[in-house]
Length: 130
Length: 131
Image 1 (cartoon, one colour):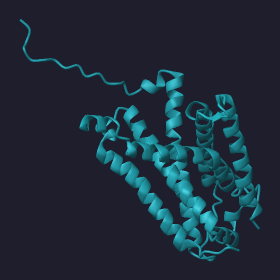
Image 2 (cartoon, chains in turn blue, red; image 1 turned 45 degrees about the vertical axis):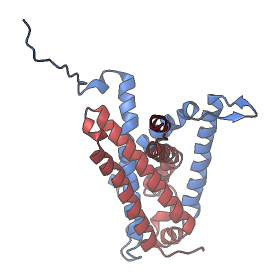
Image 3 (cartoon, rainbow over the protein chains, first blue to last red; image 1 turned 180 degrees about the vertical axis):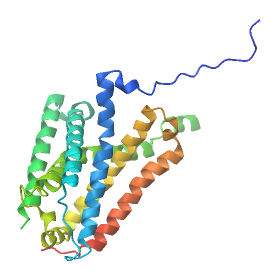
Image 4 (cartoon, rainbow over the protein chains, first blue to last red; image 1 turned 135 degrees about the vertical axis):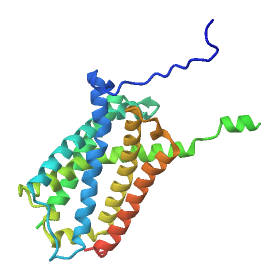
């Protein structure tokens, strides 16, 4: 006769589940992009705070290590942009004059907005420089 | 009656955090790559002149109230997005505790704390100027 004690089954994902499939891997990369972007924004706050110490104590970021760090963050940030804006066609549902806007049009609009925002911000950051 | 009322109750907190998550992700997607490219790579390598490479231009642009507001919105929304993504990444990696209330307090509380620190930095670093 079997034991009266109920046996429970606890299933858990193996730790390396995300390395077993290309789609899983890129899903984790997409979620992970938040960390380097957060670190870069924290650096931006540090850079802003540095301006408060006055002209004498101001050290503009110019080291090779900082450029390397930024290059890595740039790759992750670009991947975040590509994946997030590509999803816009699934997330955003628009109706104009009783007709549903095709998802492809929404995605193209978002990528167009990305280009315009990049040009405007780049122009401000470079145009107001000395 | 009370069952009906419960069934139709709007998940306001879910709506609130989803709003922050979606808009933070969208804003970061639209503007963060160009900030990193220009301020993190082109400026330090002297490929292009950039405002934060010189004290006078950096402090002048930081004094603009629109710039202060832009930086605050960018940091606040982005960090709520990051908090949400990293919390669920931990869940995906087999840390169910990341779903708990203390974990939510840590992640979203951290985003709120960084928002407050940003307000303090923006108010104390460069005096307001419209020039």
